[in-house]
Image (cartoon, rainbow, N blue to C red; front, side):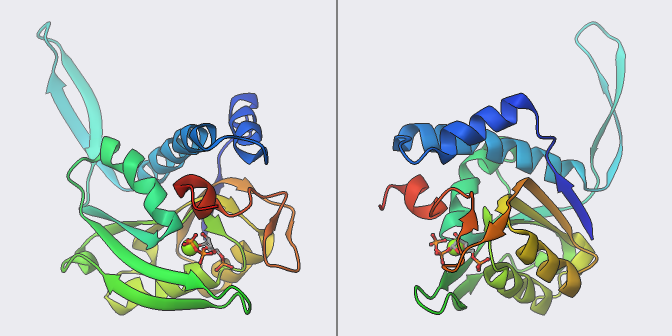
Amino acid sequence: MCFIELPQTNRLRALHAEMRDAGAPREVFVANANRIIRDVLETCIGQMPYVEHTVKTPVGATYVGTRVAVDVCAVSVVRAGESMEFELSKIFPTLPIGKILIQRDKVSKQAKLFFTSLPEDIAQRHVILMEPMLATGGSALMAISELIAQGVDEERIFFANILASPEGLERVRACHPEMTIVSSSVEQELNQEAFMIPGVGDFGDRYFGTI
Ligand code: PRP
Ligand code: MG
């Protein structure tokens, strides 16, 4: 598996510190989360295949650049994954976005699948799978299984993540060694409640204001 953790720069750690602070108001949480999400998404897209792309600049010169060589779509794991759609739409305004509704049972912590809606041609695309929290890995594994069932090759899945536990990462790595995962932070551990430590609390609740 290709695993990339964003460089733990002072800037990134400052954004994390403000966002993780239990007393952070929602607007600070959302603003900082969005900036980190943007970085994670750009890094994911950077891992895809590229071809050379040459353009003429306004002064008549030639610039030899690149462009993504494959068809892409995104899939968000509802609900927390929907938080990543806003920044994604700024990068790729017309990208198809599939949805997989998975909820963790409040007591057993087991992930449960409720609903899937994916682009018809998803098997021909590279997929950015958006899920900010990788705790036990149960939700991620369920979402990945749905993509594979639709014919998506494992090596075409790019998992865009904000916080990951070592246990969750290992579980996904063991099942899907060809996948790419980009995360902004690997946490210390999971607690008894299957929450990440130090973590951020419930990302979906804090982002969408349902605390
Ligand atoms: C939380 C979180 C992840 C999932 C991670 O979702 O947002 O989706 O748990 O846990 P896991 O790796 O142990 O499966 P939750 O079902 O609580 O709901 P939400 O996404 O609607 O906030
Ligand atoms: Mg979730």
